[in-house]
Length: 325
Image (cartoon, rainbow, N blue to C red; front, side, top):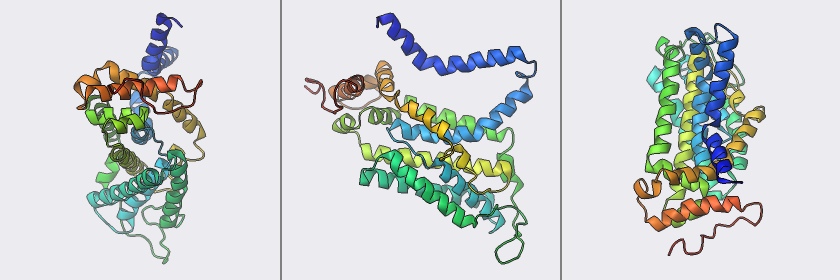
């Protein structure tokens, strides 16, 4: 393939999704009069807010070469905990959200500990923990929907109320504002900070990243904590939107029934090596990575070239001859 073809496919890789979305907006906007009006745009943004927040957390785990399949169960657990804090225990908004976030971070710690210390494939381990945390959420809720004035196991009615301030989180404009803040924050972190670049390097070639002095284990731990954090935020926003906690409320966002989403996310992993090349183009090895130049060059070059040879020879992490000399 000639240079023009490579540039064309590189352009599609970088901007193909954005171009597709713009084309869809143009087509639907031309075919109907109400598609581009303000009310419809707000409705679309509101409908994608929760899944976007949860997917952003998954994106961080993908950046380090991982894959957190337990995010749906984590969102279910967060949803159940935050609503139960109000309905069962009569707690305030701050305490309810804080307790839910703490439990989600514990989920992230468990995932990271099992994946990093037991050297088990991320997808297999988080698939197992997905069902474990799903079972914990079911046990905690006793298989019932948590809502105001629900009948408790003792036969009494729940006296707690969901605060109006909490319900406002799930309404326009706050649900959209939260989504935009999360997207912008993670984009800036992954694209313009050295820690985000380190995560991309670890995802491209963990062995070369380790040889260059990057603390691979710590960054993978941080990635799973961030993934669990945003899954928890998504579950909390979901509870604020529906004002109750359904059994397995977060399951439709990512579980065994979300196989279509799984296949789409699996395809994202194929582009990680290409992302390493983009890191190099923006000059991360010269400005943002405080490492010796030759070590960073090994990370960038080896991670990309090894994947180009994956079909023709076994994959190894031997650095290119002379890369560290």
